[in-house]
Structure formats: structure tokens, C-alpha cells
Image (cartoon, rainbow, N blue to C red):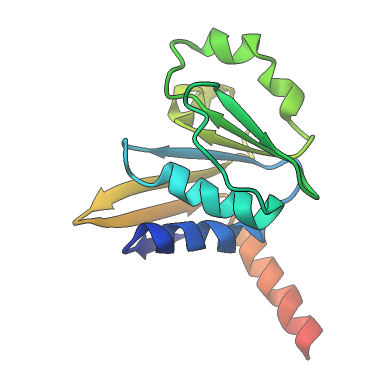
Length: 150
């Protein structure tokens, strides 16, 4: 699934829209160059799921947001090696809520196969957002919603 957004507001809105399809235990891996909108999209996701205002955890590695389903926001920008992620016990967060990982390309090989991948790139002042691993769920959710409304 590919979407183009023209502003930070649209990117955040896209985050709110896809958050409706997330469930406990999901791992969402964000990749993209610096300034491509990863944190902006995560702000929309966190706002939808918890009602909290997300901030970038660049200096603390992880922010936790409590809601009906807790959200754990990892920012691996300053991660020097994969061993660092293991020493903080990141696996303890799995299945407790939804895990959002910025700069996930640093740990791709240790992510589960059912990880949802979101890549953001800058193209002529717009954001190209490519989502993999969520298409089937979005389609099924739309079908269920359609059945309920008839």
C-alpha cells in the first residue's frame, strides 16, 4: 500500500487512520531518511490509540504511552549495535501492547516475520508512505464494517 501526503498534518492523519487496524502484539517498523516523517506519523498513531501527545524518544530510547492498549515507542537513531537493544530488554515489551520502532533498519534481522513495515521517503516536498504487512487486515476490517452497516 502506497500513499502520498503533502504536509505534516496529512502524515499525522494517516497515522491516525492506520492505527485503527493495529492490535495488541503488533510490531510496526519505521524506516526512512532523517526528516521523512516517521515521528510525525507515530504522533498520529499514539494520539489515536492512547489520546497522548507523542514526543521523540531520541535521548531516552523508549517512550511508553498508556491507553486501552499500551504503546511502546522505540527510537533507535542513537543505537550503535544490535546488542544494545537486547540489553534494554526490548523483548519484554512484545505482546504487552503495540511496539513502534523508528530506525528499525538497524535491527531488521531480529524482527519477527509478521512485523508491519512502514517506509517514508521525501519526494518533491511530499511524503511517500509505503506500508507492508497491513494490507490484508485493512481489507478484512473494511469488509467487516461493510457487513455491519448492511
